[in-house]
Image (cartoon, rainbow, N blue to C red; front, side, top):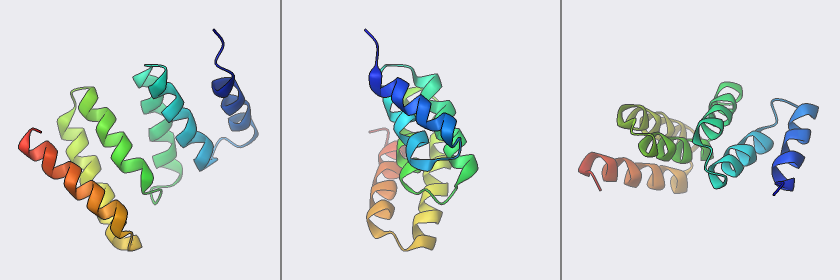
Amino acid sequence: MDNWRLEHLKGLLQEDEKDEFVLYALAQEYLKLDQPMEALAHFLKLKKYNEQYVGLYYHLAALYIELGEDDNAMNTFNEGIAIAKALGDQHALGELMNARTNLELGI
């Protein structure tokens, strides 16, 4: 079955390869389709184009955990925590710190 959302998002990305929302949405769509490496590629592109996109870090770290890359996950949580602090985003900061603690505890 064709995934019209995926195709639509790909089309939008062709219009602007640096569109943060589209890169994030594509990564999430690939996760839904159980294509983690495609999701990873889009998360990393988003990070390359805008390291300040704080919503990226929780999901990228979670994907690293899923892929068995706990060191990358921890580094990603730490990067996201630093950015959330710099931006004053208390909600993201709390989520990232909680997720990092869960990783440290093996939860």
